[in-house]
Amino acid sequence: MRIRNRLIDQAISEAANNQWEAAIELNRKAIELAEDPETYNRLGKALQEVNRYSEALETYQKTLKLAPSNIIARRNIDKLTPLLSSEGKTNQRSRELVDLRLFVSETGKTGITTLTNLANPGLVSQLGSGESVELRHEGRLLNVYTSDGILIGRIEPKLAQRLAELIDGGNKYAAAIAHIENGQVRIVIRETFQHPSQRTKISFPGKLSGDMGSFRPYVRDYSLRYDFDGDDDDEVDEMGEEEEEDLDEMSLDDVDNDDGDDDDELGS
Image (cartoon, rainbow, N blue to C red; front, top):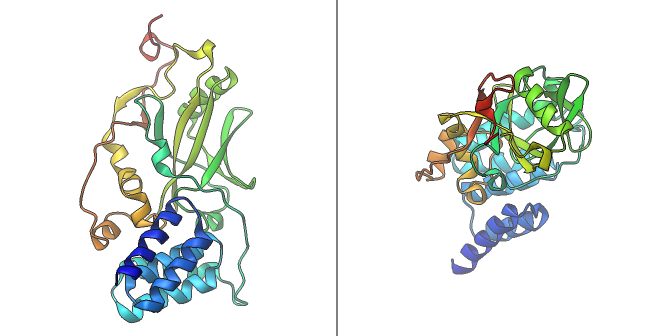
């Protein structure tokens, strides 16, 4: 079993680096030595990441043969089934993935928010945690697009106005899908560059919020969990992940309503 365990460790490592083809091959080699639900789930996740949805569906079905009550497999089957048309085809789109751990930053530099005005509900089911997205300032709106240019939705108005002003001032931001549940899309945003003219401005002012706790499960042991597309506490329990970390990050949903007052500036 030592060889099999080594293969599993290597597969997890490759997945953590978004090397999904390598993860697929390693998981399959591990399955050849012995079958288990967890390895089938990891294989299914890797197949999903390269848009091989039919194979992923078959893989999760194999999980259920070994463990009929497996929550991860059932949820992913529910997600994949509507994606596959009657002809067994689905729209293919490229994705850029990032490690969500990169978004853990100092207070005021990172936050999480729920998108509004979703443009295409059908697209939501194709999005996954860790997928890189792009912020675009368009008129009075701050819209969010996939890496291949498909509109997802908008940043809520109060936060959009603040970030748009900072972007116009020269700041730069990175963003990624943090969590998808019940048709809602949450993204995490991090300030990656602060223009000298904006040095007294905090990107995400406001009170520290426990809301970042909803982001914690996807950051914690990201590689081990393979981030099974937005299933949270139930999956953590099933994978045996019980340790918690406190991330003192800013929730964008709790951004204070300031109109350039002194409390959002650092030392005037």
